[in-house]
Length: 615
Image (cartoon, rainbow, N blue to C red):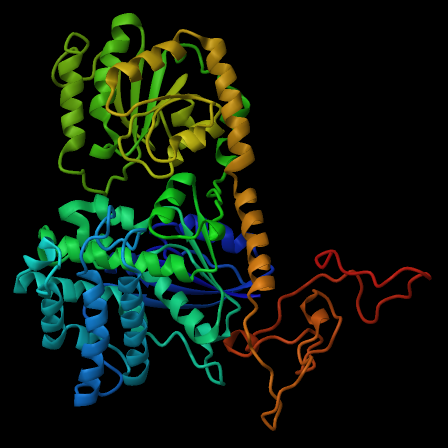
């Protein structure tokens, strides 16, 4: 089948979110043809270029969610056009400035919020999409004075939330600029019309959105216009990211890049942009044929935002276990001198709560004087430090263990060491996790704990805080304590450091669980079945027509989909019929049939023998 993969800030770019996961998925499903429709987040990402693409990626279409919009392709500004725009944008503005739902976050589209507001948002969104298709884009209209005045009227409506009512002109200008960038997919020429020329998304059999947010907009339009099934995968809920971003990063979380100077956004701006993303998430969850959260923690967010439980199916992200095979097969038996060592691996930033870890280790040292702590930072050298937090952690370590350092210019015999991944002592992640007997995760905020899974692949016993999907991932193969509780963290670490046999048992169980649930193979196998299931239940209603315009029944025989020379294509290439479009002009993928030419005769009572791939 032909799959339209929708991404934002990731694949096929060399840097970005979910890039590795998408690449493994595409390479693992080589029997399908992929078309990638990618939205970039900043000029640096586009400057880094693309990663290597496999042969069965037929086309790549890109568009930026940053910078100034492209010049409009058609005329704009007529009275009728402005009237229609005011009507549709007014519906959307009214939905994102609606009052709070009963017991629900503002604008989230969750249970308790009025379904009328969800309908108004959907009507406004699709009305704007139709308008963009007719007049060649909406960028000029969304940044116009009409848009600002329409949003202002919605915010001044009786009963609007206090945050929306406090919006000033500068706030309204900021919101309309962010909305213009988030809604740019509505104005793109990715859709086609299904009738000759470049079919775009009208020619795909399935749309797979690799994330929520702006990336799901092309899938919503393709489903509404062409009936294309929509699959939505979320390993991190975009609405949750918007809440957590806070004042400094609300613009990026709302589908726009940082504003001029990277200045913090005001309360009214954050309120309106969060409401927009909440309504968009609710619309995506309502229209998607199937939603695949990456863990139960994400699933709970999706259910809270209105997703139907019957259309939710958890698919854990696949990770490459081969990188950790050598360390993992050795078991939880660290080298001599490391059996009393705790290891922490990650980016040193406030959500990781390294401060609590240092206080916990001070308690560990009271009862285990020979214990050591290795903090291994994975931050790249070119990345800026988050507000001096790493320096604050180093200063605290020097304060808590003053007698261990020789002087102010050397580490001496301090039991706490700050290292960086790639140093001679820890050249790889496997070496980092294998450098101690117990791996610690001290976060106060976490989605899917990738580092915890890596430690499990390495066969290490773990101590983790109960945040995000930690309990679901660890599944009883490690110790879990409350977050922000240094005493509980210290007690759990001491329990494992003093019992080597228990560490070995937990490490072996953790590795077995990781190999069963979190490998690339299980992830690709799950999506292989999901693709076929969606196509069997939601086939695209695409009708074949002849030269006279009449329908051609059985124009696409069933056996044309089986690899091998079963039927002759229309162009006599010996392969089954391929849908029209740019990919049809390329040579068909090479298959390895079990025989060439006509099938050999079979004994009586034996049916046709399919090829190995077909079987």
